[in-house]
Amino acid sequence: MITTRNNDLLLQNIDPSESFPVSFEQLEQAAQEKMGKGAFGYIHSGAGREETLQKNVSSFSKYAIVPRFLNDVTELDTSVQLFGRTYATPLFIAPVGVQKIAHEDGEIATAQAAASLGIPFIQSTVSSYCIEEVTEATGNSPKWFQLYWSSQNEDISYSMVQRAEAAGYEAIVLTVDTVMLGWREEDVNNQYSPLMQGFGKANYVNDPVFMASLPNDDDDSIIQGIVDNIYHPSLSWKQVVELKKRTSLPILLKGILHPEDAKLAIENGIDGIIVSNHGGRQLDGVVASIDALRAVVEAVDGKIPVLFDSGVRRGSDVVKALALGADAVLVGRPFVYGLAVGGQQGVEKVLSNILQEMKVTISLSGITSVRDLRNVTIVKR
Ligand SMILES: Cc1cc2nc3c(=O)[nH]c(=O)nc-3n(C[C@H](O)[C@H](O)[C@H](O)COP(=O)(O)O)c2cc1C
Ligand SMILES: O=C(O)C(=O)c1ccccc1
Image (cartoon, rainbow, N blue to C red):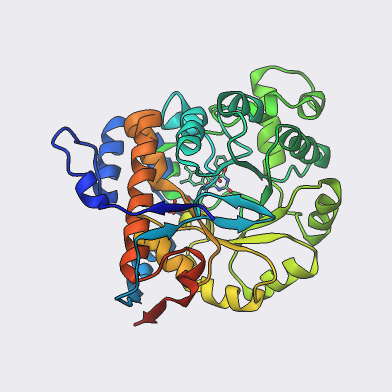
């Protein structure tokens, strides 16, 4: 149990010297002003007609909290238990690759900000700094590793997982919805690919198995090697089962939307799932992530943890997802914009605002722990 005594979090934030954008819209605008067109377009846009991108956010408004009053809410326990560990908050940093396109300090700044707030950091395969650099910068703060399967040479996947395990990472997140990149028109318009520019190569150039697989080690061969491996349409349950055998870390599948896939994950010995549609960046026209959550939670029936992302913009979104049955929630674009606007401090500001609104929302709903959020009444219109 990690209990903090509540105080008036709003008044604590009324400070005449503060000028950091507080709403998501202001934050996005400030990030746009800081970034080049290609980089901003890459982060902000979605696939296809961007139906899913928009629905991810707007669908949260369909769910409403029905609060209870006259409970003593002086104290609040924000901790969650996952895979036998206690995490200080139910908020996680979503795996986001190529963070140098937002800020030179990239994942180092984000991971340090997360560590300072006790928020677990999930590092992407295509990060701009490698596993070992992030570890050196953040010591033993909680970290998970997100794996993009390497199709041409599966030993690259096992090697990266082994490096994460050696560095003390606590879980592996296998992303299953990105066997190829989604159809993203803004990137075509801007002729922009951070992968082709080498922003996502750190984990690859520091991997002995990957480097040994190349014909030679010039930059073009490296980029070509990454592009060839990251395209992995053949990924199936067979590789998932094999991966499970190769590591002692818990494995989560990220990108599950269908209750039947959730059941298959359990049958195949998977330790957790993340309900996500990749922030509307992959398949367009799919169900909003928050609308998929309840059915998946019901199918899983408490057997493994269910995490959630896509469309979370503020603390009350976190609370709604937790009340609908998620065990923890990943924040994506908001922290990336914080990084673009203010580096490590910017990420800290964004995360701290989300955490504070989350706390206020839980307490004003009438309960005293994240665990009890399940009992909060949610109505859908
Ligand atoms: C710029 C960018 C890069 C991303 N890179 C990855 C990645 O490398 N691996 C991954 O599993 N998900 C990646 N995602 C998806 C996020 O983990 C998360 O699912 C998504 O951002 C949630 O949507 P939201 O940010 O709109 O809330 C990326 C998202 C963005 C915006
Ligand atoms: O853009 C993404 O959503 C993503 O997952 C990714 C994939 C390859 C390189 C960088 C990011």
